[in-house]
Structures are given as C-alpha cells and as structure tokens.
Length: 253
Image: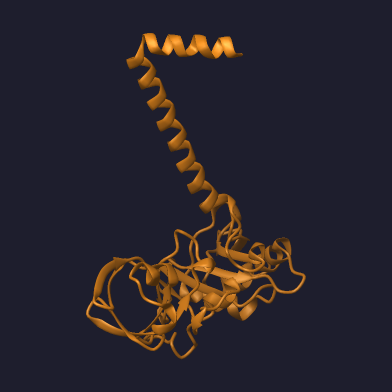
C-alpha cells in the first residue's frame, strides 16, 4: 500500500494543475452532497419536533394521494363531526411582513394559525401563552407569538418580550408568547398571528391539523372521514361526483 501511495503522489506532482482541479472537484462534490443531506435530514428524515409527532395528522380534501387544501367551512364541519382526533386546527402561510422590534426592522415570514394550532402539535410557547378563542375571532386580535430563533438573532431575551409591543408593518401588536426553537422546524415562520374567521367560507387555502385521540390510528381516522361523504354532500361542501370527501396522512408524510 505504501508503494501505491508513493506512486500516486509522484503522478500528482508531475501534473499539479490536473491534480489540483481533481481535488477541488472532489471537495466541491463532497460539500454539495453534505449540504443536500443536511437539508434532506432536517426537512424529510428527522422526526418532527413535537411530542408523539407521529400522531399529528394533516387533513385535506379528496383522496390521500391527491389531497387539497380546505376552507374555513371545512374546518368547522370537521370540528363538528370528527371524534377520532382533536383538537382540529387550521393554518395558512402569510405573505411576509416587516417586523419592528427593539430598534430593529426586518422582513420575516409569518403564518396565520387558529387558536388550537399549538395544542394540535402538542406544544405551547415556552414563554407566555398561545392564542385563545377570544384572540381568534372573525376580526383577530392584534397579538403575536414569535419564534425563539428570530428573537435570539436580534439579541433579545425571550422572557423579556412577553407583553411588549411589536409592529407588523405600521400596525402595533402585543407579543403574548415565544415558541422554543426546539419545537420549531427550519422552515417554520418566525411570526405567528391568529387566523381569524371567514363568514363566507373563503377559498380552499387552509391546512388542517389534528392529533389522534387515545388508541386511534390513521386507518380509523380515515374511516371516520370516509363516513362523512354523504353529510358533506348534503351541506354542499363536497361535490356530487366526488368519491372521497376528506383524507388524512401523518404530518411528517
């Protein structure tokens, strides 16, 4: 083996340019592979950062392999009829917002969530509280929950923020809680706001989440969702030609 190594070194010294190019190419390839694996591991392979995360379900319209987002009316309907999992929560990604806090203004991703959202995940803010039903009315209260990751980035202690004012755009809000970074994913928003209601039912742009109850399974939840087809048609939530009303998969899936 020693002779092989010495031979390889001599060959490299004879063509230093080619050798350097090969080493750089290998280095870049290894670095890119590591970066891709790190991303895939964080987003796809690593368990979600919630207690018993395999019991957190995502519910959508239609069959599991082709699920679609749902509306406020769908969420109300599911809350009324589904007993296999709960609470049932809803969320939708925001369009981003300028955040002014502690003399720092930055553009952050936001998310609108119902007052049962954190309970469905099995978490609560480490500092302060989550949203209440009174926060999550048709006209939502001007309150926010922040991600610890964002708070640390601007050099502020989370505990000192509860009850303080923050501006989203030009509108003042009150910080009611801060989520521990350990309970958020790299892709999660840094600012959470109450979802609010939509008396007209709105577009089908919401994500519904719930936590399996007791000894329930994904199969039993889907069986219960399947039994709602006729009632969904009667309430004109499901089209006459649709064969599947709602279906669920684990949130990780």
